[in-house]
Length: 180
View 1: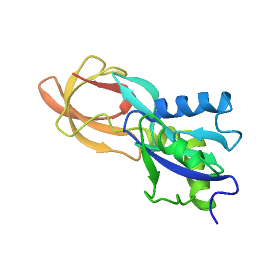
View 2: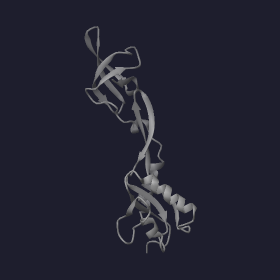
View 3: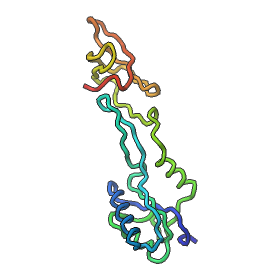
View 4: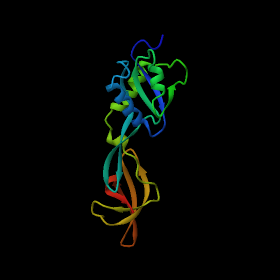
């Protein structure tokens, strides 16, 4: 007997338009168009830490692209109103009677969205073996070399540089080198 108590549903949205859908539904909630039958709308996102040119940046990206979560009570015309929101393709699964998410699924998705990024795990590897890089920190600052090995766990790269005509391997952190 779906639809007579608040539950989380998944709306399929046009990819890249998830925030527009959220803004539209939030505006409708403020205007009381849903008569209190829609309480909140979420676009699941996650924070990603990236390193570019030695600078660490935290960016937010969609955790589930093309999907918007809606907590709603599907009574009367509410299903029809949500399904016909601009940039919405329908509910997931695409049936006449939308199926709510299980509580465990909601907790997993919301937990992922609320999670603070762990710098060590979320740091994307900005280098590929064979990349030409320039050392930016340490005693070899200013030297250019080639990435020979990447240690993703320790967030280090082994760079081969020429010192006095001889190739020398240096173990450096991701923040100590930048791409040329």
